[in-house]
Length: 119
Length: 111
Image (cartoon, rainbow over all chains, first blue to last red; front, side, top):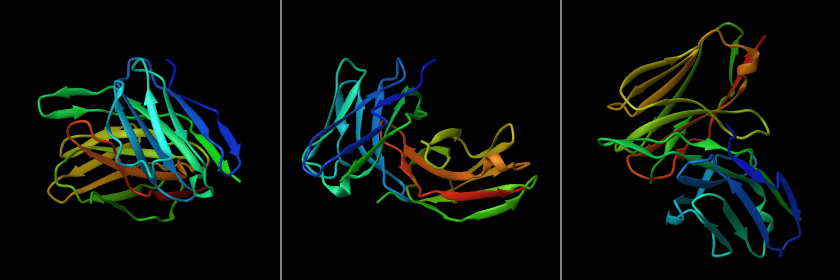
């Protein structure tokens, strides 16, 4: 089956412009996550969706960042007034949240990422 | 603050040897543990998940979990040059919480 897809794969923009990044999760996956990875760094959590709601937005670095998810499927991450420090690879992951007793089984699968370069 | 500690490496092993990657985590409430492999310029790829104490084997990979010691490891048997990548350890609590990732260990398998 199809995996997580993201578009565009690469985005070069000028400082101050707005950008929109898109994520299409694996069909049927209820949870969707956005992370970013700067050069040589680990993965930084940004925001998480369960269905269309975002229970955890704690990782968004500033109010220039926002995200939405519609129809329990596609999500867009918007960065307004981009800055050079926003340059990174933005990764989306999805998972099928399964709970059995007290345990949650929730393997996350990543898309190929969007490489954002802010000049 | 939930944290994951990994040796950044590089860890160099000869082809055919066993590569041992280690990870410690700070949150005693963690219940789910994952190992991802990330090739340079690519996104992370899930290779193992483990939820219970003990060993879990999948092909050449064995994950080991010790919740009392807050320690998880990944063994790669018969290492191949194609195993050369960065290996990321991650964990999460029960419930709907995002993964907490380590910064990864870079593995180099020398032919």
